[in-house]
Length: 226
Image 1 (cartoon, one colour):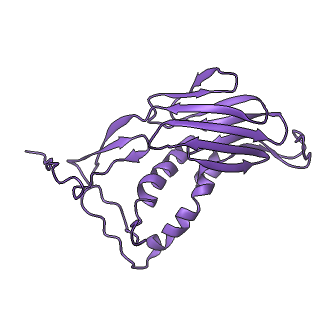
Image 2 (cartoon, helix red, strand yellow):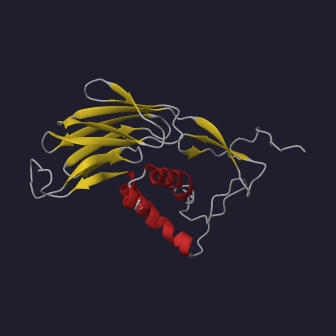
Image 3 (spheres, one colour):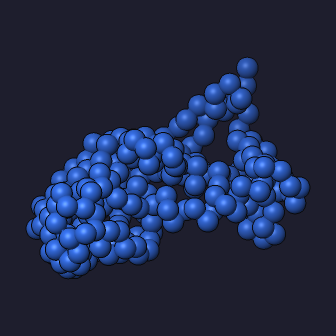
């Protein structure tokens, strides 16, 4: 999170998204609340109540999620650009969406509302309500894995984003302006690396998919034959 705050580079938000969906949330047992020290690529997770630094950090990490989703990029100091409501207040050069999620937030005088079922669906609708109409940039992070990323602004024009960068929509925004986003949640295969040399992970969008054999007993084992 600190690297993202210091640099504003999209690559760090990408790793935050991957961690939140696949390590942070997956480490907690939904029935007991117990914490798993790590999330193995193969085998059963073993949540427990033991206390150590990693398990103690799980609740803190979950509580930080709202701060990881959206924010301001390139904050302009007061007096450089006049805020139409309060000239003493800094305003953002860009309101940034780092991770698509449903919810609402007030970012430097701009109320942002997001309606989406991401990461299970790649469609999202953002409604922007600034204090007063003024020009700023609405920045959408385009994931590196996105096969396609399209945003349709209030004028009906569609623009595409480049993977690993921010798609920046700069205009004079007014109350109720909407931006519709469509992300192609590409399916891909990721090698297991040194820890799991004969395995691959199946990913869709930001999610690393998991197969629960207990819930799917008829699926056979897939064993690499030498």
